[in-house]
Length: 112
Image (cartoon, rainbow, N blue to C red; front, side):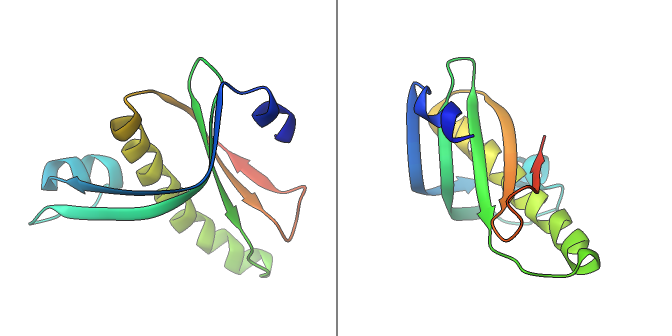
C-alpha cells in the first residue's frame, strides 16, 4: 500500500473532518434512522487519490482474539463506510476503495 501512496496524485494523513448530514443522508450512509440532523466528526488515517478515485484507509491497533475481532469488524466497516461517504461529499470525488489495516497483524487487512 505504501508503494501506491508514493505514486498517488494526492496523499493525506490524519485528515480531520466534520459534516452535517440530514436525517435522510444519515440513513443512506449508515443504515440507521435519525430524527434530527447528524453531525459526523472524525479523522481519516489515510486518504490517497490514484486518479480514478480515492482510497480511504483506517488503521486499527486492536489486539483481540478472532471471535472478538470479528464482532468489531462489523462496526469498523460501518465507520469506514460513513467516512467514505462523507469524503465523497466533501471532496466531490469518488471513493474507489475502502480498507481497514490491523497493525497488530500486518498481514491482515480488509478491503472492499
